[in-house]
Image (cartoon, helix red, strand yellow):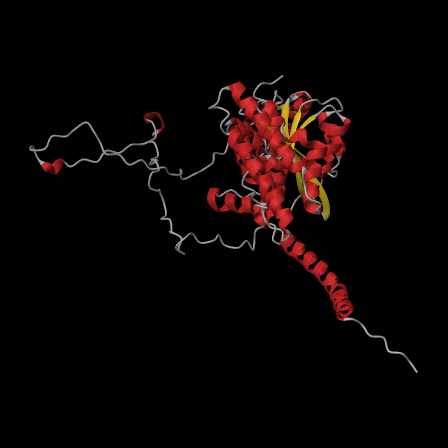
Length: 472
């Protein structure tokens, strides 16, 4: 006879709890995994390094208390100064007409004052045709015919003169117009018919004209004390290339672009050299960390990228990780409130306060809970903590890489419009033109004037203008 085995109520309860735990544990793990995936998918430009253009499905801003957002009127806003366009000075007025009222009679005295309306208009014919004639001579002895030589700048320019060439280059580079769009503009507006092949030749002449100025900027890169660097993708015939940007800040600085197949330290060594000892503002990409290990360079890692990563922690479902992110973000805010008061405080007092704020951020960042996302932030500060605070001690160094990223926006927009390049010549044109446009804006110069002076020097075989505010 089989003897039955009876379980006590406590044993039954333990068996039930064990069975529930075994069934629920994988479900909890799956829930945590899905919550992390949802948080990752919700990343936008405020919680990650994604660009603002990626916020396609960004939810609307929350409504203010009361449930209704006040709609702002178009145009000037209350409290803003009114801006009126200044009139053209007399020396820029080409034609003037006076309007009188002679029928008013003797009771009205004409004043030497006028109410003026200035009007800008295009002239009927927007271009001039210059004909350069070389006299022919025939030898009485042999009958050979010889032509007087034309000036070099005329023969090298060919059909299109330097000023119109500069306009076409500006349309192609700064306005991102295609060859067919430029062709349509010339035909409809100027009444000038040019083939796309002719336009392509003009752009290649311009690329050659800009080469010396571009090379001059490249040559001074290794000697710069401070610069910001960033890189972005560049498509070419289905291949993924990289546009590198080097920005030396300030109104006397410059911005240099280069398109390269590589995104590795090879590019940094090529343009900065092995002995570079300046300060580089950049993101936390591994290439810059490797260059930091192998050279005497110093870094200022971008706080904007770091803050977005910390904000991402606050969106996670894990309460411990969220609390860590909130506390770290609070310390960072204290640091930057202090940074923005650096001009209002005595220097020594500000430096002491900055050291305390730095230590507070480091201490908070390194005390991270045993969570993957939090430990990733803590590892950054353990490995490269000092290189987040270079800006506190080095004048002219910004805590973010925004200055270079802002100049990369034009490149990214150009990539969207043009869909990249198709070969070596297109690459060289883009990097040279982008360098000219960004540097001229930075220095407050006219890009069109620089283009014109460059092509004039190229046609005449003269020294080209410099993009450096203080040429070596």
